Image 1 (cartoon, rainbow, N blue to C red):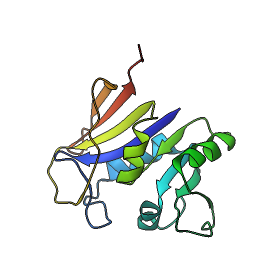
Image 2: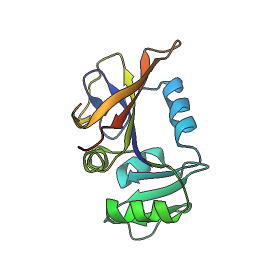
Image 3: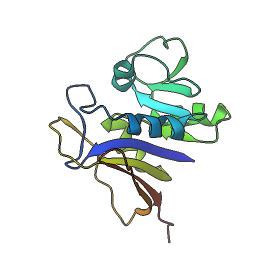
Image 4: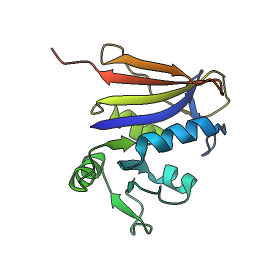
Length: 160
């Protein structure tokens, strides 16, 4: 299964000058729980922001600029190649982890979207792409009791 996983503010922000503009431990724990054991695909800038491979995951960096994969990662120069690498790794779940360009391209192929919605507006210059309810339907929404966030899951609607 190919999934997008992201956290987004009420006004659609996912980043500000190369950083996530919030620090919400409950969101990070959800991300970790959801993606552990899977393959994660991220753009070069997202990887550089994280600064290291994510443990207990098969880390794929999507980049045309990097010539050598950082230790604990593999490189792909297209999303198609990254998906192929992830499938060949034997991992059942593949997660597209950002940034915005990876999300935009991934919307065409994703089966599911895990979206943490933060009940607050943030200043930022990177936004989550819009998606249609004709393509994805909300199948789960869980409010976090200890933070102003909700964990939403959208599944791709069947093609008629």
